[in-house]
Length: 203
Image 1 (cartoon, rainbow, N blue to C red):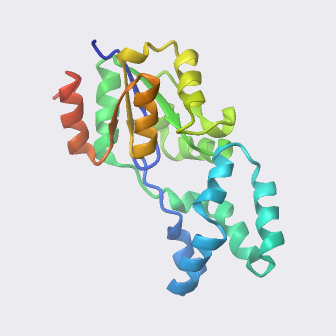
Image 2: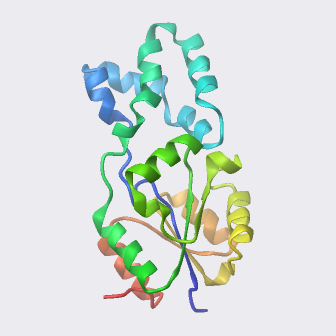
């Protein structure tokens, strides 16, 4: 079937994300910094903000468990913008080219609701396309099948005519299980090749 809908993930596909970046300054000692990000402000903890947990609740939980790290815990949200320092220009060029061609483009992202608003201000191309499903707004995250179902219904997609682009293998597998076509993002060059396989890539 011809692809009529293209769904982009955002983090590590269109914009870079690395929570360590501000902490290289905040916690200069590499061993302490590694411990902090592995045991205090962990990926699993941050994922709950992507699921819709408010930051004040998230901070309070960690500060109660790690009172000696209060300043460093609060720094996560305060310096979040430093964690997304640049876009992936090659992928952005592909995105904008597909939009210019008239392709139907939407976004599906695991993102806290408030930081996504900041990301859109930092990177206006995130306001392009037909719309976005933000996990923190809908309170369900990839790879839960419910978020693919919600996105499909929200934007009236035909699953068999949908192509999803995500850097996370579990998210790609879940999209395929739901009935979408999906490719795992590596870099812009590989994405161009993937799009060509689906007869999508412009010059």
